[in-house]
Image 1 (spheres, helix red, strand yellow):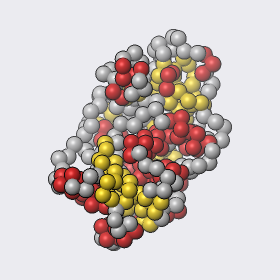
Image 2 (cartoon, rainbow, N blue to C red):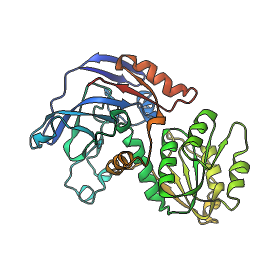
Image 3 (cartoon, rainbow, N blue to C red):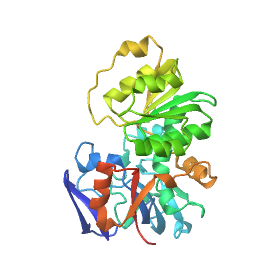
Image 4 (cartoon, helix red, strand yellow):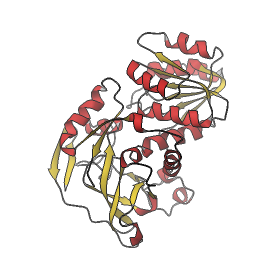
Length: 339
């Protein structure tokens, strides 16, 4: 089969590799769509823990075409998405549903081959069948939408609260979708790129702030002078996180959903301590695919505006370049396989 393989950090190529045979408890999926995540760039560049050589790709959809030992054969032919979490299913963490706390945890696309390929092997216990109303391309974005669902659950946000989202990339825009569905008010989105903010405005943001043209603290602060009840950083950038702290209401909550790339940051702890801000890490969100899929099926969220490009696997370099450059209204590039 054709697959994009990272041989080692910085070395990536399209090559022919053996089609995987599903092991016990797993299925083989013929990939229909696979999105390129910004986190994939970290794997390509060697800035995040991974196993090389590696086929990346953790945002995918497809059709089950083979099953391993112990798996119901009725899965064959089903249109599916699935969890990327490879776990033991027997430890206390797994039995309580906290898969990512499993000591044997591995994630597809990072420590196990992913979906930048014609076929991918995934655990049967994490599969969900797609309704006919949800396309393969939309379904591939259930993973980032699930991140947003998990983040908002961690904040404890409730109907009627105010919200600010720092960053209008794919995660920030997914956060906007979930904030809107949850009934949060005065949802303000900040970003450097005006084209992305235009998408946020179209998707229901109350106010957008372009950090390249406006002072973020002044502009965003004018919407909620006492601060926002719920603030989400979807950037992982020090300056943005500092601004998020300052824009969080006394007694409010700040969720850190952006990847910090291992950087050490200077943050004034007293700004958190004195104002009783609850800060939560939101980098490990799991088991929210079912709800993400249901929200798409019900028409409560629309992922189509985030699908900027659909390209062939042969054009993988173009896809990676788009994610690095983020031109215009670009949000997501997806590899498309004709099934």
